[in-house]
Amino acid sequence: MAAVPWCWGLAVPVLLAVLRYAARRLRSRSAAESAALSRDDDVRALLVTAHPDDEVMFFAPTLLRLGKAGARLAVLCCSAGNYYSQGEIRKKELEQSCCLLGVPASNVTVVDHRDLPDNPSVEWDTQLLASFVLKHIEANNINLVVTFDAGGVSGHANHISLYTALRYLHSERKLPEGCRVLVLESVNLLRKYISILDVPLSCLLPRDALFILTEEETEQARRAMQCHHSQLLWFRRIYMLFSRYMVINSLHLLEKTTLTTSGVKE
Image 1: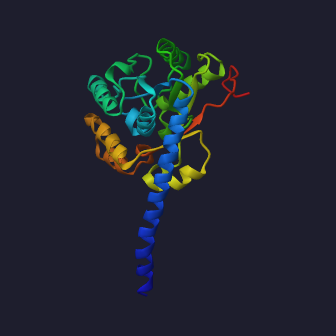
Image 2 (image 1 turned 180 degrees about the vertical axis):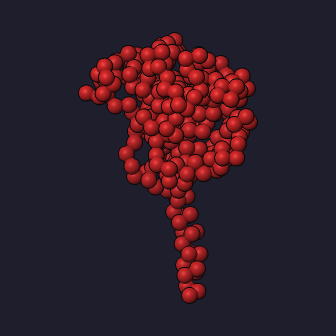
Image 3 (image 1 turned 45 degrees about the vertical axis):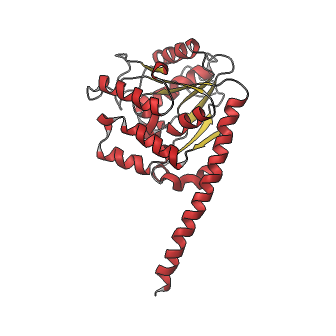
């Protein structure tokens, strides 16, 4: 009977050692992938989010790794996060968080439009949203856009609206020549909350970019999340500890498709 706990006692450190080794290998690979994105041209990357705190809750690995590779970073947040009438507070928190993630306040823009409300049940108008995003891309000569995929990570209607708007711009060829779009992969609930334990799957599954933070960078991301004081309820503190999005981002290039007037891919 004593052999069972002894085996488990041996298995745990072995598993942790394997995971640390895999994490080191993948961090090196993610650094190479971020460098490859910046190698051919001067990357001017725009992160398009729906609310203040999206930039760190979901995209911290992307911002930190692209910044380390030399990309110029900007954030376009498409609402002030005013669901609980905290919009002005959250704008300031966003700037503080972005500063820790390597994005200067001058490169942070918040769209505070009455028809783009912070509301998990509201799908934003695609044409209106696309016009704001495209104007910002053109004005800042952006050549890499990062946003949510069709799942929006959490299924939030505002997140999904961003994907729909970028997909529309991409499929209708309205984006500037050479402007690429990377969308953040939505994963199932189990993978979402196993943090670094998701490293092996992230390695095996296909993606176009993979960014994994070092322990030091992970702590940097957590400090950025702490800037959002108004949002640090108990469940978000748990999220900071266990969510893979605080450590790992796997992204895919937006596929080349066209949309019919009904919104169906052809």
